[in-house]
Amino acid sequence: MTVENLQSGPAPDRIAERVANLRGEIAAAQSALRLTEAAPVLVAVTKKISETAIRAALQAGQRVFGENRVQEVAEKWPALRKDFADVTLHLIGPLQTNKVKQALSLFDVIETLDRPKLAEALAKEMAKGARAPRLFVQVNTGEEPQKAGVAPSETDAFLNHCRGALGLRIEGLMCVPPVAEAAAPHFALLHEIARRNGLHGLSMGMSGDYATGLAFGASHVRVGSAIFGPRAP
Image (cartoon, rainbow, N blue to C red; front, side):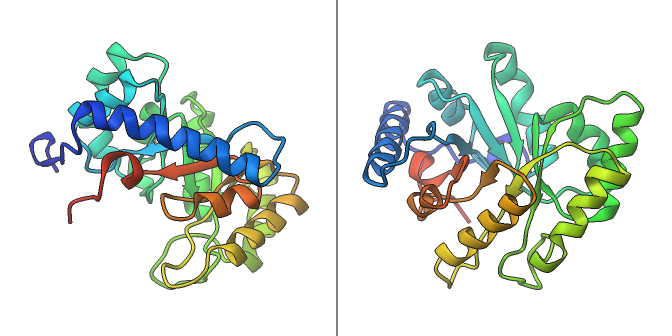
């Protein structure tokens, strides 16, 4: 993928308006649910989104962004970070072990830790002095064979391995529910796994179901199309 074939999204003023509206909707949903916790972190998903559209969100005050591919970040974000040094970047797509070193130099948060080999590669690079991002374990709550993530029944053991044998500091859990199923049971399952493992980070909820995520304690919601419009195929 090159910068030239990324989508521009709505006009800059519409992106700023959408960011403001979304924050208002999140606040209203929290109020309706009578939640007293701090507002969740809004992770603006910028996969395949152009630098121009991202700049519009940045100028509207958005500072946390999610990307799916290491190479796309390496192409798009150096120039943006020169102008907006306080940006936080989340990796929300799969990470290959041969991209670990580069990912550690680019991302502040990796939400897709999903297998022992990747955990070991991360620990090895950090032991060499690489910067240590915040880590979330991706749980495949629907146990979909085509989707990445640790099976729910294996998550406790995987967390113990990451924390104990490898010394990784795990902040929370992330999931992507099956498209054809209600999100609530999956978010409830993720919440329970986090609770029994003493984790407070819960990255769950996207453009269509973030309010459901809030009801189950989401600390982060990942929203793309509600800000930048439908993503091009």
